[in-house]
Image 1: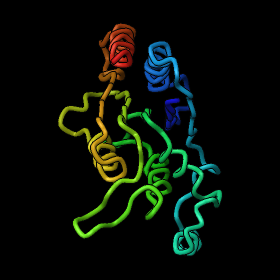
Image 2 (image 1 turned 90 degrees about the horizontal axis):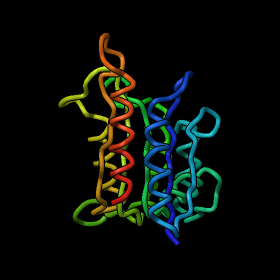
Image 3 (image 1 turned 60 degrees about the vertical axis):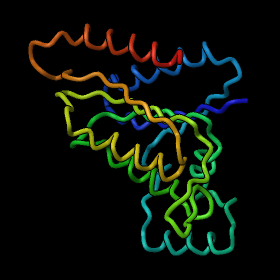
Image 4 (image 1 turned 30 degrees about the vertical axis):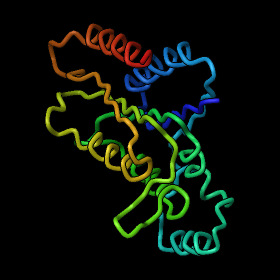
Length: 195
C-alpha cells in the first residue's frame, strides 16, 4: 500500500489559496491511485519545535544509542516511510514560512533519514516523488529559493526522487484576474496529480 504524506505549511490566517491548490492535487491523486493511505503533518507551533542547544544534546544522545522510537523523531519516521510527499507552503520572503524550515531540521536525522558515506550523504527515505505546491502574491521568476531548497533536501534524503513544482502566481497584483489564475492553477494541479 502506498503512503502519501501531505506536509501542510499553509499558515495563513485567512482562506489559504495554497491549501486550496494542494487539496485539488491530493483529491485528484487519491482518485487515480486506489491503494493510497493519506497522512498529514500539520506544521504548527507546539507540534514542530526548533532545535535548541538542549534539544540537540538530547537528540544526539538518542542517535548515538539508535533510539529512534522517541517522540522527537515522529516526523522523521513518518517522512521516511512515505512513498510520495506533497509539501504545501506559501511563497514568503523568497522561500517559505520558517515553520517549514524547522520541520525540515526535525526530519534530517543521521542514521534515520540519511547517512554519511565516504563520498557524501546517502538518503534512507523511500519517497519516489516530492511535489512542492505554492502560491505567490507576485511572480517568483528565478527566485524560487523555496523549491530549490526542497529539491536539495529531496536529493539528500531520498536520493533520486522526482521533484515537481506547482504554483499560482500574481495573486496580489492589482488588476489581475485572481479567480481565473486560481482556476487555471487548480486545473493544472489536478492534471499533474493524474500522472
